[in-house]
Amino acid sequence: MAQEPQSAEGEVGSAIPDEIPTSAFGARSELSGAQLSPDGSKFALIVTRDEATYISVYDADTHELASGLNLGSELDFNWFRWAGSNRILFSMTGRHRQDLYSFSRLYSLNTETHVMYPLIGRHMALNGDDIVHIDPDGNYVLASFATRSRRPPAVWRFDLTGDERPEPVLVQPARSNIFGYIADDTGVLRIALHLSYGGRVRMRYRSDGNGDWDTVARARLDDNDTLDLWDFMGLRAGSDQGFSIGVPDGGERRVLMEFDFATGEPGDIVFQSSEEDVSTVLFDEQRNPIAIAYAGETFRREWLDPEIQEWRRQLSAALPQSRVWILDITEDRSRMLVLQEGPTDPGALYVFTPSEGRLDLFAEYRPQVPRTLLSEPSPIRYDARDGTSIHGYLTLPVGRPGENLPLIVHPHGGPFGIRDTDQYSDMVQLLANRGYAVIQPNFRGSGGYGESFELLGNGQIGRAMQDDLDDAVAYLVEQGIVDPDRVCIVGSSYGGFAAVWGAIRNPEIYRCAVSFAGVMHFERQLQHDRNFLFRRNRGRHWDRVDGDQTNFDLDDISPAVQVERLTRPVLLVHGEEDNRVPFNQYELMVDRAEDADIELETLTFPESGHGFNSAADETAYYDAVVDFLARHNPSD
Image (cartoon, rainbow, N blue to C red):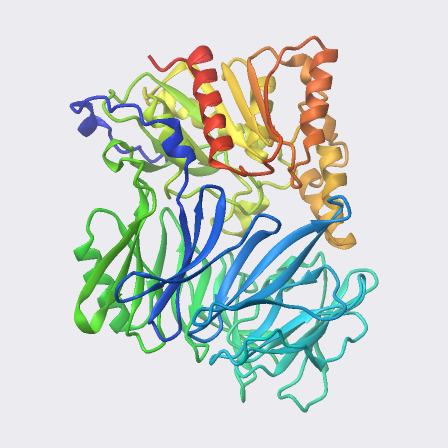
């Protein structure tokens, strides 16, 4: 049975909101990645301002800037972590040899003395930021790196007690075919992952630092059911028991299970939901689970501790306008970082001190986006033509009757295992602000709805997956919400493919299409993907696209091959630095369209990749989308 979308009648009486400038949506937040120091005296976050990136450290009591570092422009920032309460470790990526290779490196920043240095050895291969363990007091870090390319990594210890760059001390020599190590909470290496010829993986384990490495489990790289369970968590000194997230034998959804590292076998189910996949788990310093996150109609986190549950309730009462998240919490629970955000709220960061009852606003993430002008998405369900129940989100424009509206179908990327949620989206809110209804279908193959639903997508790219998008339109037309003559489709990555393919395959449904970074030729894309996949896993990846139909030809659903069938306007957009869906996908589509005398509208960004490198590029994209839709599918 289809689930009726929530009525928009409550909004009809309100005025049509003012247009929010595209620059407000393109600007993004200057702040991201907030983390408390272990003692709660400080918190750090990433600040991006005037095309510069900073690690900024603030006093948690006064909110005054205590320390910071301009990361420069030669390397790209990846992530940071606290090492004790006065030091931050962070990762940067650079490129060399005419941009043919990328390399990553670790750096240390003392937030008291402001001294920064790289954590490097005399010889290092490309990957240099693989942290195995951080001492809770911040005295040392264990990192894994190889000394030559295509050699197995060793594990090294860097002393962090001084302000001069330390020399690494070898802790674990490289072992043939061992590609990764996992340590327990005291820093003892307990798990080694072994990869041999033909894609065979072995888990080798020892109960303490003096034992022998025993092979306790085996799998192949294409055996995802087993490898998913090797998402090890909670390994503690003196114990062989930990936790893992995966689908149990005979099960349908991802659950949190006990895991016996001595045998390599999962144990009892610890937490599960009958309707939702467990997506992430938070652990305390003793590596006990303290919070479970689920991916349902709304992403949510449940705290397991009654005291934290009560604080969460009180915070929600104090900040009732949208959802409240405890973003970070100290081990002694003396201080928390709190995020308030929601579908119509880009977010605000608070500092909460429970003992004083203080809840202080630090900053709004997106003050340039007026929340009162945004539109609330509603969860809906509809039946696809084969009876499959499809879940998605419908966002209706504020101030307009909820009938005969122009529609934008907005499919997500991926496509496998990815899903849309009702979290804030710049593109969705921009389109709704311009008067469009927006539907985000979680078509078959999407994640979060159980293993069977995801497997329904195998072999269905451009076919049943596309039917699910078309059937969303049919459902909304049947409900009287959408004008069938005013429908366009806009997407990125896989969604960009689905947009162009929709215009080619079903011109009777879609008046126009917009694609950013879309796949235009699947055979060539899969050839490109093999550079990032192991041999056996690559075969599985191809099988997932092809399905079990040996007569399926990917050219039949590739826009660059089928471009002669295109009769609808298309805006094709791509970043020239895209490494995920390479720029030659765009170039091929443009060349094939010119050969077929098909006119495309095009836009490229020399410095952007699979996402936008700057607010200026993102704003220019939004401007182009709004202009394109106004000409080919006006909302008035």
